[in-house]
Structure formats: structure tokens, C-alpha cells
Image 1 (cartoon, rainbow, N blue to C red):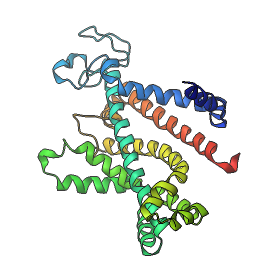
Image 2 (image 1 turned 180 degrees about the horizontal axis):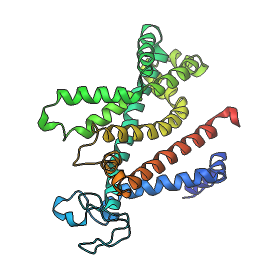
Image 3 (image 1 turned 135 degrees about the vertical axis):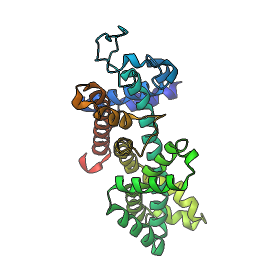
Image 4 (image 1 turned 45 degrees about the vertical axis):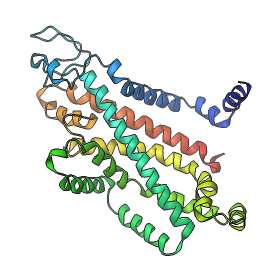
Amino acid sequence: MSGEKSLMSRFGESDFFYSFKRSPVTLVSFAVVLLLILLAVFADLVAPTNPFDVGSLNLMNGFTPPMQPNAFTGEVFFLGTDDQGRDLLSAIIFGLRVSLFVGLTAVAFAMLLGVSLGLWAGYRGGWVDSLIMRAADIQVTFPSILIAMLIFGIARGLLPPSMRDELAISVLIISIGLSEWVPFARTVRGTTLVEKEKEYVQAARLIGLGSGQIMLRHILPNVLSPVLVIATITLALAIIAEATLSFLGVGAPPTEPSLGTLIRIGQDFLFSGEWWILIFPAATLLALALSVNLLGDWLRDTLNPRLK
């Protein structure tokens, strides 16, 4: 118990925590991200209704403005309803769960792939390094969203029609992950080139450790700091990429709509006066992406030794 207290006290006295609590923008961003994550995790308990339960929908509640009674049923909805009578607040909470799940999983996949390739390229060098880095150079010449759309389209084309909706989320995760691995690979490769020439790596070679052990046990822990920063920033990009794909109709299926799907639905009714169907999902996506980006910027500045 005393060890746990000392650990907490050391963290409370660290420069990292001091920088965190002294930055109002970071505190607000962290609070927004934490709130949205909790809403997504506990969506079943927090959301007033299950908006995707067809049996509970009432079309008479459609196009109800925020905080105003419906003209037919008299029901009041905090953020209004969409064209199908779904409670918009509940739809946003459940859509937030899909967007965060896809974003976090895609970043984890991109990080695993990029770190592995960057570590291998930096340590082995030679033709392995050249092959991986030329592939990375070719990919960065194209916008990542186009790469994700290409991979998503090819994958869906290879799947039988009966399985496309079932595997749409998995294909979306793989597509975004394959479009975002390059920053991880380049950063890890550059750091590995420096680390592999240090004395502790030379000592590991002298005692007979294999390449795999040296990379995983000795080099990898020393290259993770910049990876965490890249992962935070890439999370915002992945969430926006998922929303873009869903907005274009090639992302999350209608049975599991994300924030991007809700925005696509809302834009059809923006100019007919039902502004809330678009504005509230778009504001939620903006708050999430902006807060994650601000946290990533703070993390980058805090972990950068040149700024200390």
C-alpha cells in the first residue's frame, strides 16, 4: 500500500502532471474526451432509448424540434428527433460508440503494423529497409482517405453480398489502419537507427541475444514515447476518416450508424428547416476530434525534450 502511495505521490509531483494541471485547454479537452468515452461505454444505461430498435420507433415523432412537444404525440425530446422518429440524443450516444470503437481499433492496428515494420526496417537495414520505406513513400503521396476508400472498396468487392453488412465494421477498421501506418513506421525506424548503435545493444549482441529479443526487449521500450504522441493525433484522424467514409455511404452499415452516418442523414434535411438533425451530430464529432487533437498537441510538447 505504501508503495502504491509513493507511486501516486511521485506522479503528482512529476513535471508531466504539473504541465497537465497548469494547462486549462488540456484539462477541458481531457474532460470532454473522458465524458464522451463514458457516454459511449455506458450507452445502454445512459441513452434514453435504443434508437436502433425498430419496434420502439414511432414515425409520428419524426422531425420533432429540440425541447418542444411533438404536434401529434406530445412527447418532448432534448435534442429532437430525426426523420424516423429516433431520439437524436440516443442516436448520437450509440453512434459515438461506433465511431470511437472504429477509431481506437484502427489506431491500434496501424500502430502494431507501423511499429513492427519500422522496428524491422531500422534494425535490419539493407533491402528490407529500402523496400518498407519506398512503400511508405508511395503511400504518403496519396491522401489517406483515398487509400482507405480503395481498400474498403476492394475488400467489400471480394466479400459475398450476404456478409458485407456483417463485416463492414471490420473492413472499415482494416482500411483505416492500413492507411495510417506510415507515421508510426517512419518514426520508429528513425529512432531505431539511433538506438541500435548504442552500447546496450552492442552488449546484448555480445552475450548472444537474437535479433528478435534485442528488438523487443531492448530497443522497443526506448522508441515508444513518440509512438504514444502519434497514436493520440492519429486517433483524431481515424475518427474523421471513419466519419468521412460513413458520410459518403461506404462506411458503417445502416444497422450500426456512426456519427458520420447521422451527419449524412442530417444534411438531407438541413435546408428544409430541420437543422438539428445535422448540427448536433456534427458538433459532437467536432468536439471529439478537436479535443483529441489538443491532447495530442499537449502530449507532444510535454514529451519533447527540446522544449524543456
